[in-house]
Length: 273
Image (cartoon, rainbow, N blue to C red; front, side, top):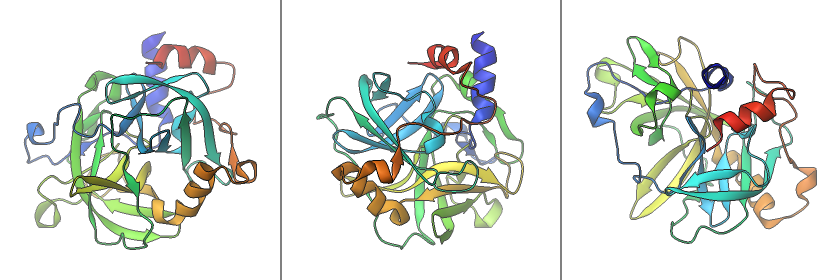
C-alpha cells in the first residue's frame, strides 16, 4: 500500500518540490542535509516547517493532516514529539490563510530559531526556497516525485513578484529575467520557508502553499506563499497563548484532496517518520 499512499500524498499537496532551471546543473542546487537545521520535516517524503522559537514550528495548514499530538517531526536530524497543532481558523483550502503553528513537546536547544518578518517589504526581495520534494526543470516541469527524490535537499532563489494581503507570489522566470539559481518549490515542499539568511540569522518571509497559472514546475508558473508579515500578529498571539481557541483550530477541518478521515490513520502510519 505504501506506493499508493505516496501517490495520494503527492496529489494532496498543493505545491511540489524544488524545480530548477533547465540550463543549470542540478548539482548547483543540491545542498547538505544540515544546510538549514531550522527546517522541519513531517513525513518520509517531505512537507516542511521552520523553527521560529525553541518549541514552535511555522508551516502551512494543509501540510498538518498527520501532525497530531505525540507524532514526531524531524529537526536537525533528530525526532521531536508534537504537543499541539494550531491551524488558522480562516484557512480555506486552495484560497487563503494557509498557515499553522506546531508546538513541540520539548524545546529544541541546539538550533538558533529563525525570526519572522513583520514588515510589509517583501515585493522585489530575492529569497531562498528549500525542500526535499520532487524535482525537474522549467522546460519539462516536475518529472521526479517527492518519494523518488529520496530526501535529496535542494535550494533555489526567486524574487517576490507581488505581495498583497495574505499572500505573496513568485514567478518561475527563464532567460535574462532568471536568477542564477532560479527555481520554484513544488509536491513535498509544502510548508517550507521563503527566507533570507544574513549575519548568522535566518528570517522567514513566506510559507509554500500552492501553485497557479500553468503546469507544475514549468516556466511561467506562479507559486503562492502565505505572507508572514500579514500573519505576524496571529503568530505572536498563538505563541503567547492569548485566546487561541478564538483564532485557531487543533486540526484541519477539511483534509487535502484525495484524503478522507477513514483512510487517514493508515496513511499517517505509512508516511510517518
